[in-house]
Image 1 (cartoon, rainbow, N blue to C red):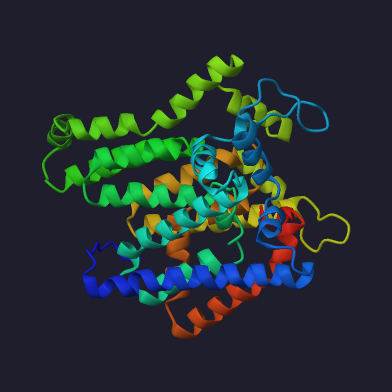
Image 2: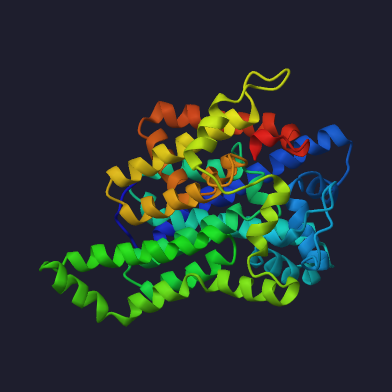
Length: 384
Protein backbone atom coordinates (compact mmCIF):
# COMPACT_ATOMS: atom_id res chain seq x y z
CA UNK A 1 0.00 0.00 0.00
CA UNK A 2 1.79 3.08 -1.23
CA UNK A 3 2.09 6.26 0.78
CA UNK A 4 2.02 8.41 -2.33
CA UNK A 5 -0.89 10.76 -2.76
CA UNK A 6 -2.05 11.74 -6.21
CA UNK A 7 -4.59 14.19 -7.58
CA UNK A 8 -6.47 12.41 -10.38
CA UNK A 9 -6.62 13.98 -13.80
CA UNK A 10 -9.77 14.03 -15.92
CA UNK A 11 -8.50 11.00 -17.80
CA UNK A 12 -8.05 9.07 -14.58
CA UNK A 13 -11.61 9.65 -13.38
CA UNK A 14 -12.93 6.73 -15.43
CA UNK A 15 -10.30 4.42 -13.92
CA UNK A 16 -11.27 5.67 -10.46
CA UNK A 17 -15.05 5.58 -10.81
CA UNK A 18 -15.63 2.59 -13.05
CA UNK A 19 -14.41 -0.24 -10.74
CA UNK A 20 -16.58 0.67 -7.71
CA UNK A 21 -19.65 1.51 -9.80
CA UNK A 22 -19.45 -1.73 -11.78
CA UNK A 23 -18.74 -3.75 -8.63
CA UNK A 24 -21.70 -2.15 -6.85
CA UNK A 25 -24.06 -2.88 -9.73
CA UNK A 26 -22.82 -6.45 -10.09
CA UNK A 27 -22.95 -7.17 -6.36
CA UNK A 28 -26.41 -5.71 -5.86
CA UNK A 29 -27.87 -7.49 -8.87
CA UNK A 30 -26.20 -10.75 -7.88
CA UNK A 31 -27.49 -10.83 -4.31
CA UNK A 32 -30.96 -9.56 -5.21
CA UNK A 33 -31.19 -12.00 -8.11
CA UNK A 34 -30.27 -14.91 -5.83
CA UNK A 35 -32.86 -13.78 -3.29
CA UNK A 36 -35.55 -13.45 -5.95
CA UNK A 37 -34.71 -16.87 -7.36
CA UNK A 38 -35.45 -18.48 -4.00
CA UNK A 39 -38.37 -16.27 -2.93
CA UNK A 40 -40.42 -16.26 -6.16
CA UNK A 41 -40.49 -12.53 -6.82
CA UNK A 42 -40.77 -11.15 -3.30
CA UNK A 43 -39.53 -7.73 -4.42
CA UNK A 44 -36.64 -5.45 -3.53
CA UNK A 45 -38.32 -4.20 -0.37
CA UNK A 46 -38.57 -7.73 0.98
CA UNK A 47 -34.94 -8.30 0.04
CA UNK A 48 -33.93 -5.26 2.10
CA UNK A 49 -36.02 -6.61 4.97
CA UNK A 50 -34.37 -10.02 4.68
CA UNK A 51 -30.82 -8.67 4.91
CA UNK A 52 -31.69 -6.43 7.88
CA UNK A 53 -30.62 -8.78 10.67
CA UNK A 54 -29.13 -8.53 14.16
CA UNK A 55 -27.72 -5.01 14.74
CA UNK A 56 -29.68 -3.67 11.76
CA UNK A 57 -32.84 -4.14 13.83
CA UNK A 58 -31.39 -1.97 16.59
CA UNK A 59 -30.52 0.87 14.24
CA UNK A 60 -33.96 0.62 12.66
CA UNK A 61 -35.53 0.95 16.10
CA UNK A 62 -33.63 4.21 16.65
CA UNK A 63 -34.69 5.65 13.29
CA UNK A 64 -38.34 4.76 13.85
CA UNK A 65 -38.75 5.49 17.55
CA UNK A 66 -35.65 7.24 18.86
CA UNK A 67 -33.56 6.11 21.79
CA UNK A 68 -35.23 4.09 24.53
CA UNK A 69 -36.12 5.79 27.78
CA UNK A 70 -35.65 2.62 29.82
CA UNK A 71 -34.03 -0.77 29.37
CA UNK A 72 -36.84 -3.15 28.50
CA UNK A 73 -35.63 -5.16 25.50
CA UNK A 74 -34.11 -8.67 25.35
CA UNK A 75 -35.73 -11.67 26.97
CA UNK A 76 -34.64 -10.46 30.39
CA UNK A 77 -35.92 -6.94 29.82
CA UNK A 78 -32.46 -5.46 30.36
CA UNK A 79 -31.66 -4.33 26.81
CA UNK A 80 -31.84 -0.90 25.20
CA UNK A 81 -30.58 0.70 22.00
CA UNK A 82 -28.20 3.07 23.80
CA UNK A 83 -25.16 1.08 22.63
CA UNK A 84 -25.67 2.25 19.04
CA UNK A 85 -24.24 5.64 18.14
CA UNK A 86 -26.37 8.28 16.45
CA UNK A 87 -24.77 9.43 13.20
CA UNK A 88 -26.02 6.60 10.98
CA UNK A 89 -29.60 6.72 12.37
CA UNK A 90 -29.63 10.51 11.93
CA UNK A 91 -28.55 10.26 8.29
CA UNK A 92 -31.09 7.54 7.56
CA UNK A 93 -33.87 9.44 9.36
CA UNK A 94 -33.05 12.51 7.26
CA UNK A 95 -33.19 10.61 3.97
CA UNK A 96 -36.15 8.32 4.67
CA UNK A 97 -38.86 11.00 4.18
CA UNK A 98 -37.49 11.62 0.67
CA UNK A 99 -38.00 7.92 -0.06
CA UNK A 100 -41.58 7.74 1.12
CA UNK A 101 -40.62 6.92 4.68
CA UNK A 102 -38.86 3.70 3.67
CA UNK A 103 -36.24 3.33 6.40
CA UNK A 104 -34.55 0.26 4.93
CA UNK A 105 -34.27 1.86 1.48
CA UNK A 106 -32.70 4.90 3.11
CA UNK A 107 -30.30 2.66 5.01
CA UNK A 108 -29.37 0.89 1.79
CA UNK A 109 -28.78 4.24 0.06
CA UNK A 110 -26.64 5.70 2.87
CA UNK A 111 -24.56 2.55 3.23
CA UNK A 112 -24.10 2.28 -0.54
CA UNK A 113 -22.98 5.90 -0.85
CA UNK A 114 -20.61 5.46 2.09
CA UNK A 115 -19.14 2.33 0.52
CA UNK A 116 -18.65 4.14 -2.78
CA UNK A 117 -16.93 6.94 -0.86
CA UNK A 118 -14.72 4.36 0.85
CA UNK A 119 -13.57 3.05 -2.52
CA UNK A 120 -12.89 6.56 -3.85
CA UNK A 121 -11.06 7.65 -0.70
CA UNK A 122 -8.90 4.51 -0.94
CA UNK A 123 -7.72 5.38 -4.44
CA UNK A 124 -4.91 7.80 -3.42
CA UNK A 125 -3.25 4.98 -1.47
CA UNK A 126 -3.79 2.38 -4.19
CA UNK A 127 -3.12 4.56 -7.24
CA UNK A 128 0.15 2.73 -7.91
CA UNK A 129 -1.52 -0.68 -7.49
CA UNK A 130 -4.53 -0.83 -9.85
CA UNK A 131 -5.02 -4.56 -9.20
CA UNK A 132 -5.29 -3.88 -5.49
CA UNK A 133 -7.79 -1.08 -6.12
CA UNK A 134 -9.94 -3.30 -8.29
CA UNK A 135 -9.77 -6.12 -5.73
CA UNK A 136 -10.69 -3.71 -2.95
CA UNK A 137 -13.79 -2.67 -4.91
CA UNK A 138 -14.75 -6.31 -5.44
CA UNK A 139 -14.24 -6.99 -1.74
CA UNK A 140 -16.50 -4.10 -0.78
CA UNK A 141 -19.35 -4.78 -3.19
CA UNK A 142 -19.16 -8.50 -4.15
CA UNK A 143 -17.25 -9.93 -1.22
CA UNK A 144 -18.01 -12.16 1.74
CA UNK A 145 -18.89 -9.20 3.97
CA UNK A 146 -20.68 -7.01 1.43
CA UNK A 147 -23.91 -7.45 3.44
CA UNK A 148 -22.48 -5.20 6.14
CA UNK A 149 -21.90 -2.51 3.53
CA UNK A 150 -25.42 -2.45 2.06
CA UNK A 151 -27.79 -2.29 5.00
CA UNK A 152 -28.26 -0.49 8.32
CA UNK A 153 -24.79 -1.18 9.69
CA UNK A 154 -22.08 1.36 10.51
CA UNK A 155 -19.23 -0.48 8.75
CA UNK A 156 -19.37 1.46 5.48
CA UNK A 157 -19.80 4.84 7.17
CA UNK A 158 -16.99 4.10 9.61
CA UNK A 159 -14.68 3.05 6.77
CA UNK A 160 -15.43 6.14 4.69
CA UNK A 161 -14.91 8.56 7.58
CA UNK A 162 -11.72 6.77 8.65
CA UNK A 163 -10.19 7.22 5.22
CA UNK A 164 -11.43 10.80 5.02
CA UNK A 165 -9.64 11.56 8.28
CA UNK A 166 -6.41 9.94 7.16
CA UNK A 167 -6.56 11.68 3.79
CA UNK A 168 -6.71 14.97 5.66
CA UNK A 169 -3.76 13.90 7.80
CA UNK A 170 -1.69 13.00 4.75
CA UNK A 171 -2.24 16.54 3.49
CA UNK A 172 -1.35 18.07 6.83
CA UNK A 173 -4.94 19.28 7.34
CA UNK A 174 -5.26 18.59 11.06
CA UNK A 175 -8.51 20.50 11.51
CA UNK A 176 -10.06 18.59 8.62
CA UNK A 177 -8.93 15.35 10.23
CA UNK A 178 -10.49 16.49 13.50
CA UNK A 179 -13.80 17.21 11.79
CA UNK A 180 -13.76 13.74 10.25
CA UNK A 181 -12.94 12.40 13.70
CA UNK A 182 -15.93 14.17 15.23
CA UNK A 183 -18.20 12.41 12.74
CA UNK A 184 -16.32 9.17 13.31
CA UNK A 185 -16.78 9.31 17.08
CA UNK A 186 -20.49 9.94 16.51
CA UNK A 187 -20.53 6.69 14.54
CA UNK A 188 -18.67 4.45 16.99
CA UNK A 189 -16.91 5.04 20.27
CA UNK A 190 -13.58 3.96 18.78
CA UNK A 191 -13.70 6.99 16.50
CA UNK A 192 -12.14 8.99 19.35
CA UNK A 193 -8.84 7.28 18.61
CA UNK A 194 -8.44 9.43 15.54
CA UNK A 195 -7.43 12.20 17.95
CA UNK A 196 -4.43 10.09 19.01
CA UNK A 197 -3.63 9.39 15.37
CA UNK A 198 -3.72 13.14 14.69
CA UNK A 199 -1.32 13.79 17.56
CA UNK A 200 1.06 11.05 16.44
CA UNK A 201 1.03 12.15 12.82
CA UNK A 202 1.62 15.77 13.84
CA UNK A 203 4.62 14.64 15.90
CA UNK A 204 6.01 12.65 12.97
CA UNK A 205 5.48 15.61 10.66
CA UNK A 206 7.22 17.95 13.10
CA UNK A 207 10.23 15.64 13.32
CA UNK A 208 10.83 16.09 9.60
CA UNK A 209 12.05 19.60 10.39
CA UNK A 210 14.86 18.18 12.51
CA UNK A 211 16.15 19.56 15.79
CA UNK A 212 15.93 18.43 19.39
CA UNK A 213 12.79 17.13 21.08
CA UNK A 214 12.39 20.54 22.76
CA UNK A 215 12.43 22.24 19.38
CA UNK A 216 9.96 19.71 17.98
CA UNK A 217 7.65 20.24 20.97
CA UNK A 218 7.93 23.99 20.50
CA UNK A 219 6.92 23.73 16.86
CA UNK A 220 3.93 21.60 17.80
CA UNK A 221 2.82 23.97 20.55
CA UNK A 222 2.82 26.83 18.06
CA UNK A 223 0.49 24.85 15.77
CA UNK A 224 -2.98 25.74 16.98
CA UNK A 225 -4.51 23.69 14.18
CA UNK A 226 -3.01 20.51 15.66
CA UNK A 227 -4.51 21.10 19.10
CA UNK A 228 -7.81 22.13 17.56
CA UNK A 229 -7.94 19.00 15.41
CA UNK A 230 -7.19 16.78 18.41
CA UNK A 231 -9.96 18.46 20.41
CA UNK A 232 -12.47 18.21 17.58
CA UNK A 233 -12.19 14.46 17.10
CA UNK A 234 -13.98 13.34 20.31
CA UNK A 235 -16.85 15.85 19.97
CA UNK A 236 -19.18 13.28 18.42
CA UNK A 237 -18.81 11.06 21.46
CA UNK A 238 -19.18 13.97 23.87
CA UNK A 239 -22.35 15.15 22.14
CA UNK A 240 -23.84 11.65 22.43
CA UNK A 241 -22.88 11.52 26.11
CA UNK A 242 -24.61 14.85 26.77
CA UNK A 243 -27.71 13.56 25.00
CA UNK A 244 -27.74 10.33 27.01
CA UNK A 245 -27.28 12.28 30.25
CA UNK A 246 -30.38 14.34 29.54
CA UNK A 247 -32.34 11.47 27.97
CA UNK A 248 -31.78 8.63 30.45
CA UNK A 249 -29.71 10.21 33.23
CA UNK A 250 -26.52 8.30 32.40
CA UNK A 251 -23.89 9.79 30.10
CA UNK A 252 -22.18 6.39 29.88
CA UNK A 253 -25.34 4.44 29.13
CA UNK A 254 -23.81 3.33 25.80
CA UNK A 255 -21.14 1.50 27.82
CA UNK A 256 -23.18 0.32 30.80
CA UNK A 257 -25.84 -1.30 28.59
CA UNK A 258 -23.19 -3.62 27.15
CA UNK A 259 -23.79 -5.84 30.16
CA UNK A 260 -27.12 -6.91 28.64
CA UNK A 261 -25.10 -8.54 25.81
CA UNK A 262 -22.87 -10.31 28.31
CA UNK A 263 -19.95 -7.93 27.79
CA UNK A 264 -17.79 -7.05 30.78
CA UNK A 265 -14.49 -5.21 31.00
CA UNK A 266 -11.61 -7.65 31.19
CA UNK A 267 -8.22 -8.73 29.90
CA UNK A 268 -8.22 -8.73 26.06
CA UNK A 269 -5.58 -11.45 25.99
CA UNK A 270 -7.79 -13.55 28.24
CA UNK A 271 -10.78 -13.06 25.96
CA UNK A 272 -8.63 -13.87 22.92
CA UNK A 273 -7.27 -17.05 24.47
CA UNK A 274 -10.71 -18.04 25.69
CA UNK A 275 -12.10 -17.63 22.19
CA UNK A 276 -9.35 -19.76 20.65
CA UNK A 277 -9.69 -22.57 23.19
CA UNK A 278 -13.47 -22.65 23.56
CA UNK A 279 -14.70 -25.89 21.96
CA UNK A 280 -17.07 -25.72 18.98
CA UNK A 281 -20.75 -26.39 19.52
CA UNK A 282 -22.55 -29.51 18.31
CA UNK A 283 -22.24 -29.91 14.55
CA UNK A 284 -19.62 -27.13 14.25
CA UNK A 285 -16.10 -27.78 12.99
CA UNK A 286 -15.10 -24.37 14.27
CA UNK A 287 -17.04 -22.38 16.85
CA UNK A 288 -18.19 -18.78 16.69
CA UNK A 289 -15.69 -17.74 19.34
CA UNK A 290 -12.82 -19.47 17.57
CA UNK A 291 -13.74 -17.78 14.28
CA UNK A 292 -13.86 -14.38 15.99
CA UNK A 293 -10.54 -15.01 17.75
CA UNK A 294 -8.84 -16.05 14.50
CA UNK A 295 -10.18 -12.93 12.80
CA UNK A 296 -8.85 -10.80 15.66
CA UNK A 297 -5.40 -12.33 15.20
CA UNK A 298 -5.56 -11.58 11.47
CA UNK A 299 -6.49 -7.99 12.32
CA UNK A 300 -3.62 -7.52 14.75
CA UNK A 301 -1.25 -9.12 12.24
CA UNK A 302 -2.30 -6.53 9.66
CA UNK A 303 -1.81 -3.78 12.26
CA UNK A 304 1.74 -5.05 12.79
CA UNK A 305 2.34 -4.97 9.04
CA UNK A 306 1.13 -1.37 8.91
CA UNK A 307 3.65 -0.54 11.63
CA UNK A 308 6.40 -2.39 9.76
CA UNK A 309 5.60 -0.21 6.76
CA UNK A 310 5.98 2.81 9.05
CA UNK A 311 2.35 3.86 8.75
CA UNK A 312 2.37 4.57 12.45
CA UNK A 313 -0.80 6.65 12.75
CA UNK A 314 -2.92 4.08 10.92
CA UNK A 315 -1.34 1.24 12.92
CA UNK A 316 -2.11 3.00 16.20
CA UNK A 317 -5.70 3.78 15.25
CA UNK A 318 -6.45 0.26 14.01
CA UNK A 319 -4.82 -1.44 17.00
CA UNK A 320 -6.78 0.62 19.53
CA UNK A 321 -9.99 0.20 17.52
CA UNK A 322 -9.60 -3.58 17.70
CA UNK A 323 -8.55 -3.61 21.36
CA UNK A 324 -11.62 -1.66 22.47
CA UNK A 325 -14.25 -4.36 21.77
CA UNK A 326 -11.79 -7.10 22.70
CA UNK A 327 -11.53 -5.62 26.21
CA UNK A 328 -15.17 -6.58 26.78
CA UNK A 329 -15.44 -9.95 24.95
CA UNK A 330 -14.51 -11.74 21.75
CA UNK A 331 -17.96 -11.14 20.19
CA UNK A 332 -18.27 -9.80 16.63
CA UNK A 333 -14.55 -9.38 15.96
CA UNK A 334 -15.09 -10.35 12.32
CA UNK A 335 -16.93 -7.17 11.42
CA UNK A 336 -14.66 -5.01 13.57
CA UNK A 337 -11.70 -6.21 11.49
CA UNK A 338 -13.34 -5.97 8.06
CA UNK A 339 -14.71 -2.54 8.99
CA UNK A 340 -11.21 -1.07 9.29
CA UNK A 341 -10.42 0.35 5.87
CA UNK A 342 -6.62 0.64 6.36
CA UNK A 343 -6.43 -3.07 7.19
CA UNK A 344 -8.55 -4.11 4.22
CA UNK A 345 -6.58 -1.89 1.83
CA UNK A 346 -3.40 -3.52 3.08
CA UNK A 347 -4.91 -7.00 2.75
CA UNK A 348 -5.93 -6.28 -0.86
CA UNK A 349 -2.44 -4.96 -1.58
CA UNK A 350 -0.92 -8.20 -0.32
CA UNK A 351 -3.37 -10.33 -2.29
CA UNK A 352 -2.72 -8.30 -5.45
CA UNK A 353 1.03 -8.84 -5.33
CA UNK A 354 0.73 -11.54 -7.98
CA UNK A 355 -1.73 -11.52 -10.84
CA UNK A 356 -2.76 -15.16 -10.33
CA UNK A 357 -3.45 -14.56 -6.65
CA UNK A 358 -5.53 -11.49 -7.50
CA UNK A 359 -7.70 -13.57 -9.84
CA UNK A 360 -8.08 -16.37 -7.29
CA UNK A 361 -8.99 -13.88 -4.54
CA UNK A 362 -11.55 -12.13 -6.75
CA UNK A 363 -13.31 -15.39 -7.64
CA UNK A 364 -13.14 -16.51 -4.00
CA UNK A 365 -14.78 -13.24 -2.88
CA UNK A 366 -17.60 -13.63 -5.40
CA UNK A 367 -18.15 -17.30 -4.54
CA UNK A 368 -18.25 -16.44 -0.84
CA UNK A 369 -20.77 -13.66 -1.48
CA UNK A 370 -23.06 -16.18 -3.20
CA UNK A 371 -22.58 -18.90 -0.61
CA UNK A 372 -22.96 -16.69 2.44
CA UNK A 373 -26.11 -14.78 1.46
CA UNK A 374 -28.42 -17.43 3.00
CA UNK A 375 -26.20 -17.54 6.10
CA UNK A 376 -26.45 -13.78 6.51
CA UNK A 377 -30.22 -13.81 6.09
CA UNK A 378 -30.31 -16.55 8.74
CA UNK A 379 -28.35 -14.18 11.04
CA UNK A 380 -25.26 -16.37 11.28
CA UNK A 381 -22.92 -15.22 14.04
CA UNK A 382 -19.94 -16.33 11.96
CA UNK A 383 -20.39 -13.19 9.84
CA UNK A 384 -20.58 -10.82 12.81
